[in-house]
Image (cartoon, rainbow, N blue to C red; front, top):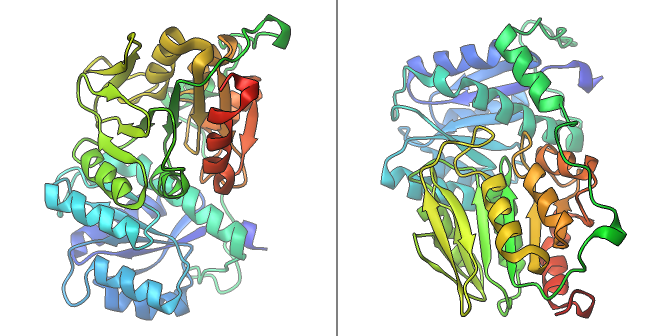
Length: 388
């Protein structure tokens, strides 16, 4: 049975050192295995039919066939195996990474020290979590059976090793739900009024999910939008530009003091928190370098807390695909204040983490499939039942 097989990963990087370091991270994780390595896109294409990987970790800058050329050929051949880009931080790298997402890459992870990152272990947990998320989804959807090394039939997933004390404490904190306020009974909530602001919190799986939402969004959207997407500094400006190119709305990276205008989408800069302030004529945003919240900066909880305080029952808040619980607590505050709350449904999430916590706590009014998100938002911001 395919669920007993580890997820198979093909590592594609022109550096032998990087191939080996990345492979150690993958092979050292429960339920993952490297089924093959390739030094460029051409060799990767040749190996895919034989190895049948569940996911490809892809470098961009490689000889003979680079990552962008590989993605173009992958699309031409109709290959569906998900691809996660390992990207460098340089500005040109950000532009190329967004091009890669446009060509069908699922997500990206930033190499900590450029193309040759001997400290790649710094993002080891992120690599493992991302591989599991996209590889598992591909396995569920296709029933793929990778060619697992040294095991022509099956290689059962080993039991999870005992967690270290810090890891165990972190997991206990993640699983605790009794520190979240109980939802306010419907009869005690303020009634939603006209929607004046849309706020979105999203993480793993977000880049492509947001592309789908904003490509389909009504260009006459009558409210401003603020988005927290967990993404490193240096990438959010190019990400905003890539969304602006495919959306009928104005999409830009947020700057201190930006106006909250109808039809304008502000993407929170990487490594900054964002808060909103409601003013008589037009709201504005504020950026800060405050400490990370829930391990994140930007944090969806920081945004949602300010939305609840400033807009209350005139806000629409959306929590979408992502690991962990960021945004789940403070979307509850918006809910108690009478704002309208949406969560992406489990089936369409890459990781049903953040939405699940909010749903489990009773903080969500509507659970929505990704393909229906844009239409649902458009309907709710104009709905007479919400005072619109």
